[in-house]
Length: 228
Length: 228
DNA sequence: CAGTGTGAACCTTTTCACAGCA
DNA sequence: TGCTGTGAAAAGGTTCACACTG
Image (cartoon, rainbow over the protein chains, first blue to last red):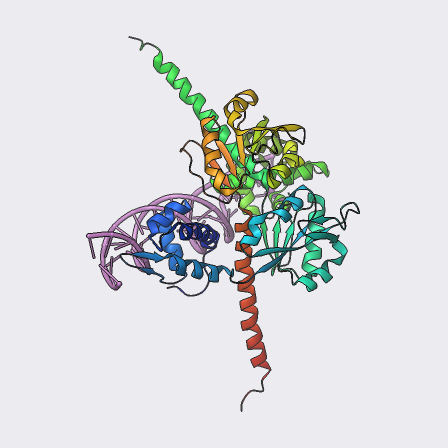
């Protein structure tokens, strides 16, 4: 076993393993090899073994890993043995959808508050919680002990909301707004940008089309009778 | 300039630069240095220069990059000079939200169809398009010349929908379902997993809490009178 | 002389390959 | 014998630092 601090790339994969493990646990096997876990998670087995080795030596040579025990260890490492109260800022389409999304609760993330500025949505009830005004952020964060803030506002409002979150004491932000936000060093930000994902796909799609053209061109030439 | 094929990491950043450039173009300056573009995109200037050098030598020493020209070049490289017809599978909360999301259209991604299986939503109109049955996928793909498929179904349906998309001729998939999907080699998949993002944030949040405890412990000890 | 373009150094991540253990 | 755990090699990505140029 190594000492503290897991590589970033590994942290990004632990939730994937966790999901696969939970599914496997439901389907029966109590033990699993790195090879099989790798298949379920969509990576290769060397990566699985190296990643898991950062948590400790929880496998058994010649056998594999005990599924239930490994689930527990990954959960502990990720800090999922506790519940995390989450606040969403922006009650538009996306904020709306996320507040009703069942997948969060199942994984220990409880949406405890929803804030916005538009008078139209204030007070509205969405998925069991009512929309409050963003001015009340500090009080809400204290009241609900909010740990994570999710930004679902339009791009121009993102920085302001981020500033308010930081002031209110939030130290982890998930940003869905298509804008960069700057925060103090002690605050973690992760960004999810839907249209960037599409743009990346477009790049590879275009590349495939270009290659096909070249290939077809060659194929067509190959059909030409060889000049003799 | 290098030859073909841009590193993956660079492809992932080009859309970020593009967004920053477009915003800058609206605000006036016709020319920008790597230093300033880096600030706007939230990276460092060396990275900007290296990334842009993969596209060609489009900067001017002592001056910087011409904003309009660079926008054009990045767009061309990403394949954004054309429109990309997009199909969404799954008209639940998220599919709903995405179909109404304005950010896509603005960047050349047109949602042309929405498919689902539940009789309840079929025929319903969302954001100008009506929900069709997933069985009609092949016809829809042909009719609309769909290039990119977005999966917004529950996890258990994801693989089936992916298979249908591939059969219908789609070669680029954006997967929002919390499940791994396997596709033939010639198909690109990108995955966006909302609860994985939260889990990653939870890991770092927990780590910060642990560090604070250690620090406070030391601080408290530091306040003790030195034994003499 | 300000600022690009880029080799070279450095760091992170992935993959290989195998010793060592149940 | 089968599969983990891990050094060591390879690949990929980032940062440095500076020659070069408009």
